[in-house]
Structures are given as structure tokens and as C-alpha cells.
Amino acid sequence: MESSGGGGFGDPLERDLAKVSCDVTHGLVSRKRAYRRYGLVWQTQKVDPHQTKILREQLRQKRIQLRICYWDEEEHFGSRRICGIGVQTLTRFGLVDGELVELVNPKGAPLRAWIMILASAQENRIHLGATSLALLGVAESDMLEMRAIRFYEGL
Image (tube, rainbow, N blue to C red; front, side):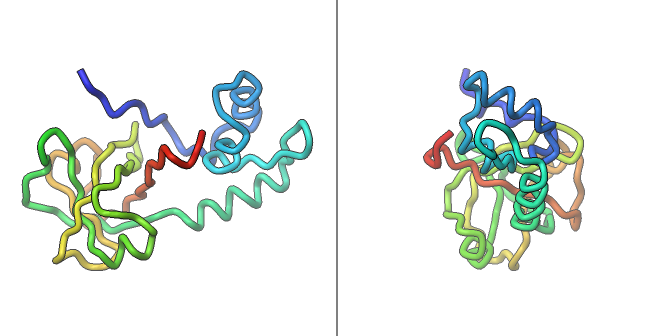
């Protein structure tokens, strides 16, 4: 069996500072990943709560928020779940065709999908089929957060 893996649960920028710090201490997450993903700023050997709050707000502002459009197309290409996005949106957010992304589920675990360029897509729109909408518990015209999964950026 192949699986895309777990995407975690809940907003990483809301994760308790002490819990992320503990994960770093135990080698589960690197300091670099704690900074990039969880917004933790270190001051020598401890977390700086004030700077962490500032960084977390900056990271929130950079999130990719897209309006959902229903896509009455095949959702799978081989064994991959696909989401359709326009070239303008890909370029704006530095994404590429075929890239793996997480679609943030407001009520549960994220759904992973691969980007497919959709020529007819308007800017800041993501096209999802019925199964993806149901799994995420969202509807057409809702806003959805999308995160790039970049394994090569280091852990």
C-alpha cells in the first residue's frame, strides 16, 4: 500500500510553543523546520515568545487562500488526486505544474493533491471535484488554504 502520509492536524501556527520546542529537543523537528513551519524564533536555547508571535503573523499573511470552484472533471490521474489551478495563480505563489500540495481541511486532516494547470481557471481559484469537496467538507465558492509540500527544503 502507498500513502501520501499524515499531514498533521490543526494549524501549525497555533501549536503550543512548548510542544514544538519539545519536538526540537527530541530531534523530531529541526530548528529550521520549527522556524519555517511552526513560526518559532529561538533566542539562544529557548523560544522567544514575542518574536515568535510576530513571525507567526507574518507567516499567516503569506498563506495561499484560494476560492473553490467545482470541477466536473476526472479527479484522478492514475493514482493521483488532482486539483486544477491557472498559470497566473501558480506563478504568483511560486508553484509548478505537478507539484504536491496540501488542501487544508477546516475540520480535519489535510487532503493532498497534485496541481494540474487548468487553462480556463481564473486567478486565485482552485478547481476541485465532488470527492475532494466532500472529503474536505467544503463547498463551491468557499475559501480554501493550500500549502506546498516541499521535501527538498529540508526538515
